[in-house]
Image 1: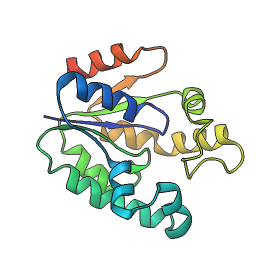
Image 2: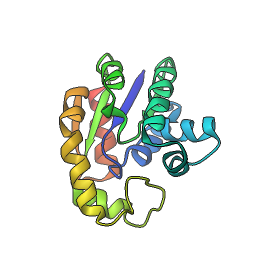
Image 3: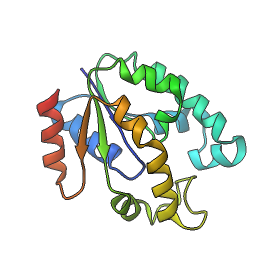
Image 4: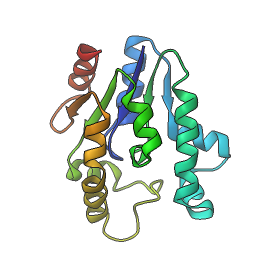
Length: 165
């Protein structure tokens, strides 16, 4: 079984994914980490040296490779749904969960991070809102299930994912 988590940065895809994978005894796969390993540098450096387009191309390749894995919990990058190729791949999957998190929660979870290349350019709250507005329809169209993240414990979120798989 493959469970794929999509949603904005700071929604909790990686943290929920790791706990979920441990709980149901599946491998945890983080597409952003795979890209960093493949490139030998952090995502922030990829953005600054090679650009966002190059990074989005890598996401398509890594997602294709990752979806060949028979079972696992897969956490994707927040912008993976920007490319139509990725949306088409994800729409074919049975267990795609959109971890829908308010912009305020995203901000609280990302405000101290310097690893987010699309942030730290000024008003992070405004940037997060713009990204969320731009991507929301893609998250909704691509996912089979939507989980509201705000005011829920990790256990409640994981229980909801397990119940729907």
